[in-house]
Length: 491
Image (cartoon, rainbow, N blue to C red):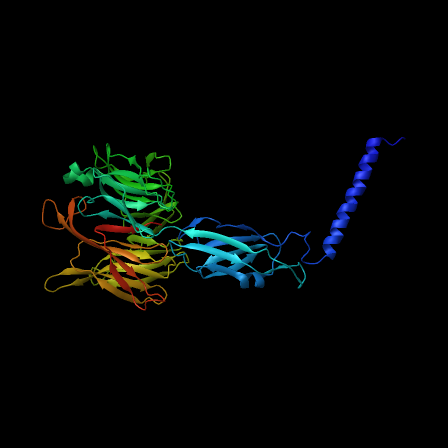
């Protein structure tokens, strides 16, 4: 059979390319580790490159295009400013896990200028790595608070600590009562009423969001945008909580026409509100996984899925309130009100509870446990407590305390004189604890206001408690040069 011309061309091409491939393989294997024909070992991907990270970002990945000698890479990995952490490997990927969140308001650089390839199954080291440079930054350090001076009273204010810049987020025709920041710090959810509703404002709250423009490129025309999320036409809106992933809002609501109809409603990302109908509600808190609700029911805490009419996932009869969760969701601070106390002493116990089944009593007192927050690494609790005193008359003396969760040591830090209300907020990067001192007066009486009464803030101060560090051996307390109350760090 006669061989066609196209067949001859194909055979010749195969022979030629086979020869070229064999020549390249021979040349690569004989010209040494610095052969220009080889692709040098290098970092092919850095998971934090040019990204803005927050307290929830605790590890990054470096992916290499070749198997690398672990010791030489680890010895030459440099992060500036330093971020202590630990290294682990999986194939060609290096995982670096921070010991604690990266301090906010910083620009970081990462270098690998030396290190070598590791040949599989051999102790021989290969070519040096191509020098690598990466960069990332942490979010601006910022907090929000409710103003309490002329022109700012009742308005939500953002203070960018990194940029030393104050921004009023809400207009004067809204009086803000409470707020929570979304996980990226780009928006804030808040409840507010109109100034003209002052005598009945607590019953006419509506939910809004406002943009913060934090960590974004701003222009001369940039301004905060406000959006109504939930009105008050048919229902009175009370307490609310925002899930850690920012996708769900839980609100306690009361039907205006039928006050016997009250309970919890869920608002999802589509802004549609629907009743859960599985609880009329006591004190509640969303779990850190954003999938369930811890709520006081009867003499215990029920864990409810965020599905209408769903049955509880679990019930904790020993506790009466969940104060807070650690950021990773592995632990919680809970209160036992000691209703079974045989001595008829009205005491409260603070418990540390984790997902390993540990229930540890931290403190038992006759005063009150107002608030507790975990530090970012869940090694300590910062708590606002009160001590019951009897002279010259019975009253509760509030104080701020730190609890070491490893040793159970309780360290009283600061007494809060002339106290009526206060809040604490722990920085996501561990910088310190914000707290306020607030004096209020009831609009209709001179006594302390009840939950459904309005009150005027007549005086307020905000403070920052800074834990010991390499620079300071003791806790430091600074009064902030801002006038307002309810300061809360942004994530």
